[in-house]
Amino acid sequence: MKKTLALVFLLALALSCTAPPTNRDLSGTNTAANVAPEKPAAVAITEADAIAKEKAIWETIKTKDYEAFGNMLAEEQVEVIDIGVNDKAASIAGVKQFEPSEVIFSDWKYLPIDKDAVIVSYTANYKGKMEGKEFPAQTVRASSAWVNRAGKWVAIFHQECPLKPPGRPEIRANPRRLPRGSAGKGRLRHPRSRGDNAAWRSSSR
Image (cartoon, rainbow, N blue to C red):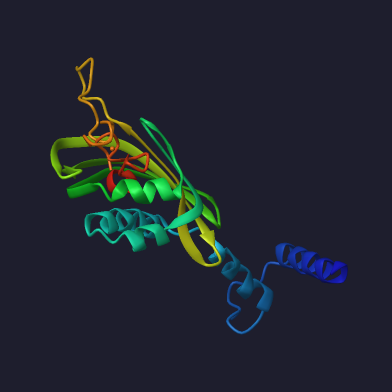
């Protein structure tokens, strides 16, 4: 290993100190130089792909594909919403009460942590039903952390907070904030909040 590292360092030094003639054809030479640029290929998932995954998890809620929803979550997933903190089981239970009919995303932000983790944040405006009851349009700021597990990207963290309209001292109760029985990536009491009203990605994703 030490000999290999030493060789790599020597090659790097040689390459950095020796500038090839501008008219020289390097297509079939300098293997080290040709291979080096490929290493960054193991970078984090792209911004477009991360956003697509976030939208896809919301779509599983709209289509009531709860198995797919669960498969997109890490086993130790944590969801933080206005009324509490949910684990994976509670998040899945919560979205089953949330029925988003329309979700509009905006203000996307992308933050790569390393090649195996990224964070996306955004604003989501949605409307639909919570526990069978219609609720007025809700707007939240949300963020999710995605990690690479054995080649599969899963959501390990999600959080949402209601967006307060400008000029209003108070905001109407988030549907996901209502007590169980009234409505909680869900939101009415965070439709997905807390297993019973947790509609997490239902509202957050």
